Length: 240
View 1 (cartoon, rainbow, N blue to C red):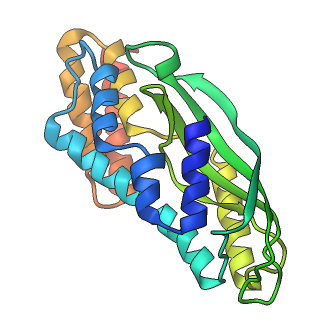
View 2: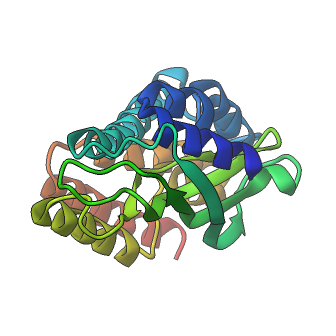
């Protein structure tokens, strides 16, 4: 995990989202390779168009989350470029094997990533508080591929030294972390599209995948739930 640690520390020092995109997050090529392995031998394999659509959605969320992290550092003058930064901890709350083919090591993923940093500097935030202290960067999920760990879900500040941001921002950080850390069940369309059809008779797999995609394409949650309930009835009838 050392490469990921170095990349994220550089993002914080340089306050540059481009570094996050290039060095710390899942790339499109990696996404395609993972999808290929996940659906190896399955008739439910998504089309190139669908794979690109999923990637566009995921990429947008990842980049937006990194932009929020950088925006906070810029807004409050959290300039750590010349600071002494010591990585105290880098870990996941839990690890698990992803579905698909490939080596065991390259099928590892983890929930609730965190990186704890001890920062020493003479600098001050725009609030007037010193910047030295404990910083914790978190992400919903990460995965290992090609011998590297990468962030695969949204990144955020989990903890900042007291007083370096205003009260409203501190409350926003606390609320964002509460919501993220209550999401113990991870919802992933790729895994559902793989795991649901593969348990069905071969002649029904493509139809199941088509019904799932149809539900996800709905404009509102209510419409999507209606389609998913219809899918459940159909599944009960053909595969109790």
